[in-house]
Length: 411
Image 1: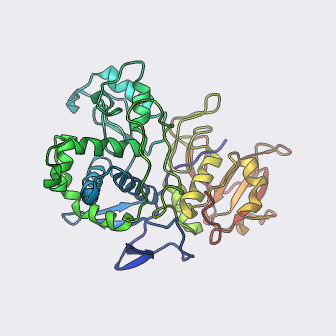
Image 2: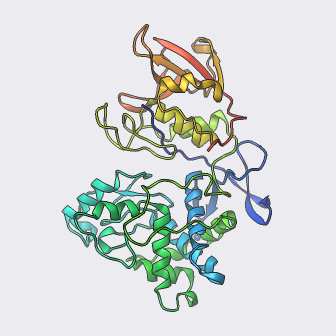
């Protein structure tokens, strides 16, 4: 099986504003490669925090910002849509740094917990089942906005979950569309919210102990400039029924800030290296993040990656291209769709970004894939987790040399 993880591609802010789509102005960015403009654009950027520090947001995190703005456009705010979206973006930047967080399930008395240890453990157990970008530690909070299922954020009006429907509440709260929607529903219930500053409005919704939202106002302004052309996103039912399983919004839903149209081997390798240390997890992972194991296979921890999951993740994060086949064997069989199959060139003939396929024994079928790192090493996920290892050649079966400069988004 194969998994996918989450990588970061850093793209630096430059001085000018550039026009990326009619009527949409975006902060000028240095792109990884050039290419014809399309609905899916490379949007990763560095933005400054109030106070002088830097905050860097990856492709996936910009996609989350696009989701927040798209939901705001569907909420009927009218002329206050930008104000509402800004308050929400400041909240997400503060609460999670634009990461869709599961809960670690660990209770600690020094965290000022408002729920007991068994409740925290249940939230940890269930939240990790859904796509996530890491784990958080605050009470029973989950998601981009760090909303709390035991406070009733899984429905509107807010109703506390029962043991029988807690997982359904958490499933909704791991869905970025619902998270934004319930934030805005709560915002609408705040008297005179539109007369407040964005930071005051965020605090009125979140009732945070820290109230640090104002620090991210300039970040929110730059994100709004980048994703102002986001399309409206359909709202979800406010009751537990009818909400699809959590998923990251598709390229079709996010017309402005998707993944890179073109990429490079360097970007693919950077994405793979960003996951070094993640455990081996058979069958886990998505195009966006590590995920739990599939029962029955080797599981050294979760969420994590298996070999093909890491390769699919790295290629997607670096280029925007989704390698469809899920197993190493099928990836090699379908290699002509995204590259060129070549004969074994020898260890010194491999170039950075080559996908190298192996069997577990001479005469066996393909069961492993690694990414040539161009430095006499492979990036791979195997027993011991995601790592960069010296090249080994035993039982190699083939090489696919992806055309990273021309493969485009095929979602």
